[in-house]
Amino acid sequence: MMRFIETIKIENGIAHNLGLHLERASETCFHHFGVRTVLPFETIINEIRSSHNEGIYKLRIIYTNIIEHYTIEKYQPKIVKTLKVVDGGNIDYSFKYEDRLALNKLLDMRGGCDDIIIIKDGFVTDTSFSNLVFSDDEHLFTPSSFLLNGIKRQQLLKDGKIKEKEIRMADIKKYSNVFLINSMVDFFQIKRIVE
Image 1 (cartoon, one colour):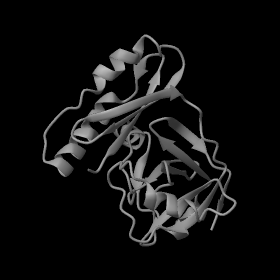
Image 2 (image 1 turned 30 degrees about the vertical axis):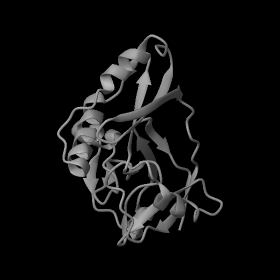
Image 3 (image 1 turned 120 degrees about the horizontal axis):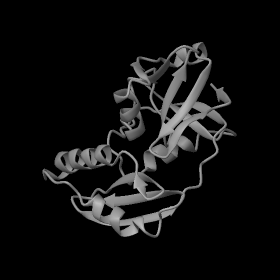
Image 4 (image 1 turned 60 degrees about the vertical axis):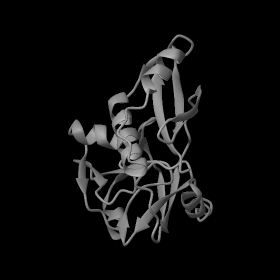
C-alpha cells in the first residue's frame, strides 16, 4: 500500500501550521483511499509535547488511511549552497509520497552541487526537498508550476508574503536571490545555481 509523509515543525512544544498539515493529509487520504478522515496528529503532538518542549524538532508521520508510525528528532538543518538545474522529465510528486525514488534519481544528477532545481516542461518547479522562492529585490515569487504544494508555501501565499508566478528555466537568471522553503525552513538563501 502506498504510504505518505507529513513533516511537522515542533518548536518549544508548539506544532507549526498544524491545520494545513491535517488538511493535506485528509485530502491525500480521500484521493488515494476514498476515505474522509482527520488523522489524529494532535494526539501524537500531545504525547511528545512535555519531552520536546524546548528547541526545534522534526516530527515525521508516516501514514496510509491511518497513522503507521512516527519519529521525532532534534532538527538539524540541511546546508544547501548550490543548486544544479536538471530536467525532471515526467516526474509526478503532487502528493508527499514516502517513496522518493524518482526524486532521488534526479538528485543523483546534481554533480558537485548540494541539491537540484527540477525543470518540468521548461518550467521551474521545486528542489528535491523544498519549494523555491525567487526575489527581484522588490517582490518574492514562487513558481506556479510547483511539484508539491508545500505547507510553508501555502502559509506564505495565504499571508501575502509571496506571490505565485510562472517561472521558466530561462527566467532564473533574472532574479537576484533564490530561497528554499519547506515546513522546517524559512527562506534559506542559495549562493549559486549551475545550469
